Amino acid sequence: MLTRLDRIQLVVSDRIEAAERFQALFGARRLAEDGTATLAARRTTLQAGASLIELLTPTGPGPVQEFADRWGQGLFGVGFATPSIEAMAARLDANGVPFSAEHGVLYLREARYGMPTVIVPDTPRDPVGDIRAIYEVTNPVADWREAADYYTRIFGLEPAHFCPIRSELYGYEGVLTLFDPPRRLDRIEITQTFGGGAMDRFFRRRGPSLYMCYLETDDVPMLEARLEALNLPWAPAEGRPPGTNLFIHPKALFGMLVGVSKTNFAWLWSGRPDLSGAPE
Image (cartoon, rainbow, N blue to C red; front, side):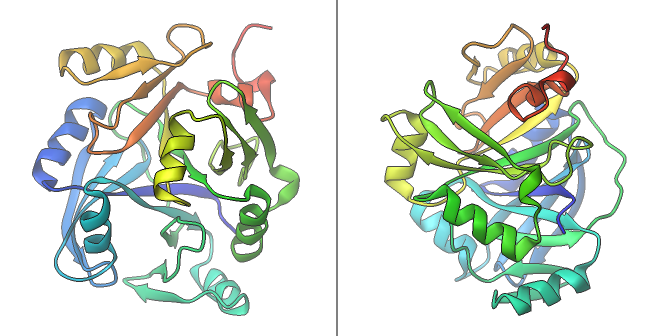
């Protein structure tokens, strides 16, 4: 019942500064300034590619304030699209998942595995700027199978679409819960961490939570050049050909780690390497 990853939510201390950074780096377009009573936050909404980025600052006690008090800035939540909000609401009810409805979207009132979630109608959106879309959030947990079973049940996912993953280099194993392959890469990456690497240290510090997001672009070197011009920290992905993969440091994007892959290249590790464009 999920069709794509529609948006991410980021808690920041200065929405104007953050909006300008996303505009300069990704060619994002500012769409709206409003608020959400459910999150007790003011919100600046940007579009980058076909995805939305919601920049949040707290207006009082609530989940955004709690996040800001504990962690400062960073990736707070994610929004997934569904073809029927009514059917999704009925499914959540049937599975005992509490939610609040606000302005036609559903906010889950619990994040059992550390992933605050909003469900929105699947509305087509022409891409803008210099990326294609945000297609993944990474959710480290104590037991990836348990979390995958839970998300499968409450969101109506199809396990036959999932792709197992393991990385000795980065220290994790788990699954990609692909929503609509091979048409789209969109998914939740659910991981168990090991080995003392960056994700493992993050999990040991924060517990179940959102670690990062991944986006794709037609022109990875263009983003490298912009990062250099803006004096923002980044690193190439280890073991990947030049121009196909990089990581944007959390210091560059207000506490959020962002992976970037060349359009379709992520199929190389997502179950369909024949779609990646990588040489045989």
